[in-house]
Amino acid sequence: MRARLRIALLTSAGVFGLAAMGWPASYAIGEVFKEDNAAHSLLGSYLAANLAKSANDAKSASQFYRSALKIDPNNQLLLEQGFHIEAFEANWQRAISLAKELVATKDTKTYRMAHLVLGLDNFQ
Image (cartoon, rainbow, N blue to C red):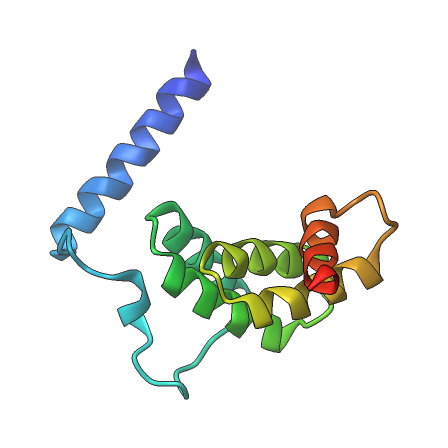
C-alpha cells in the first residue's frame, strides 16, 4: 500500500513539475536535440530513447538509441532495444546490422527476433 502511494505521489509530482515548466503536450521528444553536435551522454540518450518509446515516438527513440550505441557499441541491452525500434520503424538495413551484432554476442537461443530477421534476409 505504501509503495503504491509513493509511486502515485512521485508520478503526480513529476506531471505537475512538467506542467509548471510549461511543457506543451504536442512537444516532440526528438526536438530536444535539434543539432547533430548536441551533447549526448550514454545515460541521457538511453533515458531519452525510453521516454520517446513510451511516448510512441519511434523516430526519436531510434535516434537516441543510435546516439547511445555510438558511445557504447557493445552494450547488449542497447543493441537489442535499438534492433527492436529499427525493425519497428522498418529501417531494415540498420535492423539487420544490429541483428548481426546481437547474434554475435550471445548464444543462439537468446535473440529469436534477430535470428528471424537474419533468416528472412538470407532467404531473399
